[in-house]
Image 1 (cartoon, rainbow, N blue to C red):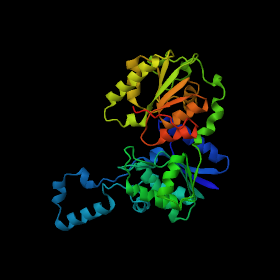
Image 2 (cartoon, rainbow, N blue to C red):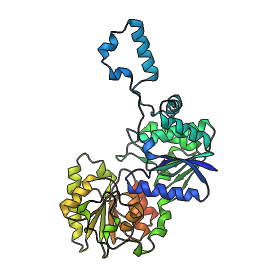
Image 3 (cartoon, rainbow, N blue to C red):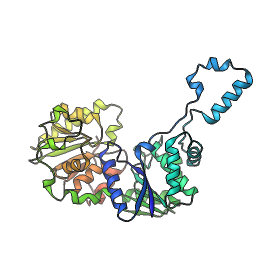
Image 4 (spheres, helix red, strand yellow):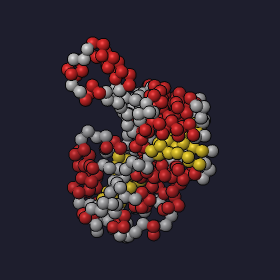
Length: 378
């Protein structure tokens, strides 16, 4: 069976997106042929067209004779508008992909990929958060599912979660779309029991089952502590910053601190930097060196490391080596889902902070932590 895999997130800087997408691809490749892949940078934008009138002075356009002016405005409204092409209506989005395939190269390629595949597989990850506004990526994934449905292609939505917004609210339109499209999918793989329970209330007809995140398949990388070099210079990514050389030492026990998706959404990054700097200073009292691990491009974490005078691992570190840093720490303090899985793969215990969904509340259940485990606010 030839698959079209959509939502491969390895092109993003986030460690979890990179690692779980690669691991999922490796797992699928053991039984199927991945014929084509649609990466994250394709589906993260709304796609727009600007009309010629946006580039010209409207007063100039208005000087056209009446019939020409009306004809021009009609044509630009139909074929050259500034409208968003990927919308909260998957049927309209699918129509736009077909309609503008001659003008948007990616749309033409997507249509070819859907037509050529035997089945569409969606890497759901953390996209199905029922917040407002909806994630553009999620709207694109719904449009792809609509295209596959119109062609009668089997659909699998896997490695995903379902969550209300961080404040507990729910975008009902998104919930309705989730019910519609996950109910028609041939198979739905959900990565945590909390999400599965929520989905069963939203879409009881969905053929949904619990399977832990694909990243758990990387346990073999972290069985041997020797895979992590003692000298951290070996992990530095291109372009190598002078200030990072000689700062990372993995030869002795250490504590890791990574970020939180809640902190990244904080309207005040300076506050987040100050809070994390205080956290780092507090952890120093445990007597072990602290290393900040930027598992996403969170500038506030780098600022926190600099304020607390501790080294940091950059977000663009090679992903398997980056995972080893977490897997072989003595402790990880984090509000990130996949970095906590990295830690668990090597036996590193975690202190969990909050996130932008129920992710860090559900993961301890999978890892068999005590049921009364506390999740800390940032």
